[in-house]
Image 1 (cartoon, one colour):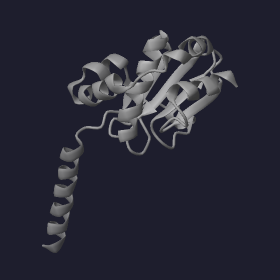
Image 2 (tube, one colour; image 1 turned 120 degrees about the vertical axis):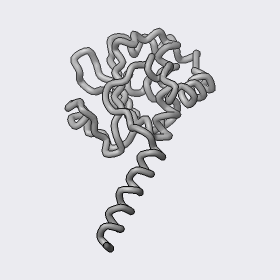
Image 3 (tube, helix red, strand yellow; image 1 turned 30 degrees about the vertical axis):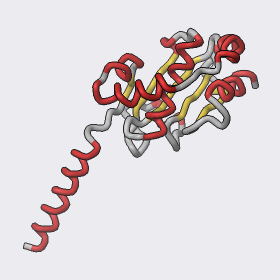
Length: 160
């Protein structure tokens, strides 16, 4: 009887935990999914609308990102991802960056998802924003939060 009670308690706590966190989205995400999905829209719009892009750096940054590709690995459940990803997307949109060269992957708390590429990227923290050249060679990454600003960090990555 004691074992049954323990098992039931364990099952109940797992169910309660699942209800608290909801389903964790993993896999590829599109910008439009982040902007239209009811579950994401509130936090996405808050950060997107609240971020002020450093337009003085825009011409140089636009040029330095030309021909580059960007991969963002984020966790829908992660407060840093919820803050930084909308801001990064706003910067890219303001620059006129070709969003077909932006790939977003959502991972679970173990930093995994169905795409094998995630393991090869050696992601430890989310969000991680990786900039690569046209040959797929990594130029640099922003891990969790920018060291200075998104604009400054992207300029530093692309000008080295």
